[in-house]
Image (cartoon, rainbow, N blue to C red; front, side, top):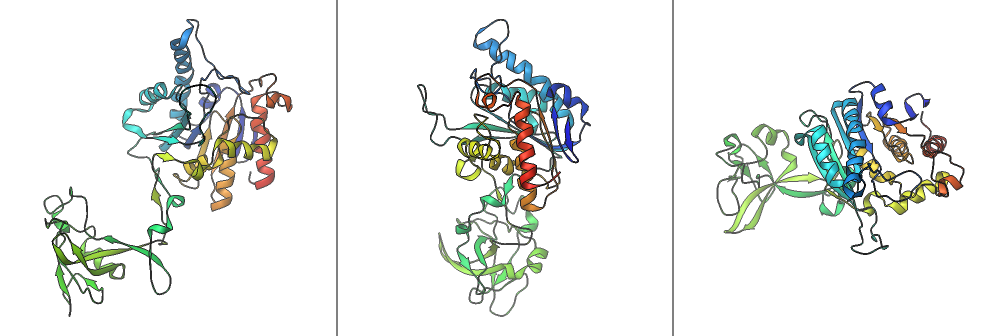
Length: 386
């Protein structure tokens, strides 16, 4: 085991290492296990039981993964989450296995990750351009994961400007979801008062004001999104305007939704992540090559892991039980440098020999763990940390 204070790299079989970690001590797991493709990489990526055939290959892979997922679950905090990458070879089996180990109620998302925008051009059939990312909570009711990101906010969505240059947009103060109405939310159905000439809004009548009730576009009664006290607290964030509705001109109330607001703005993450947002296999290869050479065929881009890191608090303890080329540890260092976070990373990788003739073996890396160790050392030298 090589350790530098908070960030730890452990060489060994993760099935043996995981039980040595304190139960509930990890906030976030990201990992990229073998995909069982049968291809030759720097490491073994083919599992097969004695029966032979495709079914036996799946069975062997599931048998390998099940106890490791159980061990991962046990080290996760009740507030924590697991993200795990996979491709079409084992995606269906992994989903069922995760439901079994973590529980269907703790499923959070199945994300399509566009890591190869050009698609794989070798062989027949479709040019596959994506993989999958499964997200599960240890306990969905307690999980602190925030499925949003500041990086997905588009400034073009805020086309209006104040005199001092602050960008904003108008959102209806009325709740547009028809599940919320005077029957289901009676305390939010009340009149407000607004002057479309000055834009002023209040909960009590004033000179020049008109009474405004929340209504849907078809005229049916609706409710506001804000309570009376909140309207009284934030009148400057509201504006009264005359609009052309379905039944002619009417007065309505809108919220000024600011692009830059206190606490920062975040936008919910979609379940399709594009390579231009999080990087691609090509950019990941370039990242690794810039540190220790082209010694791993399909590393993950740090942008992918940094997006995952951004869903959890900046002091998270992060674990990668299949550390591979060391992308997770690299991403943690970059994230901490960017936001002054105090994330800590535990990386585990086996001492499995690299495949003879592979780029890694030719570069002098005897084991897969040697690759991980070399990258993490290079990251430490370049970006600092412990």
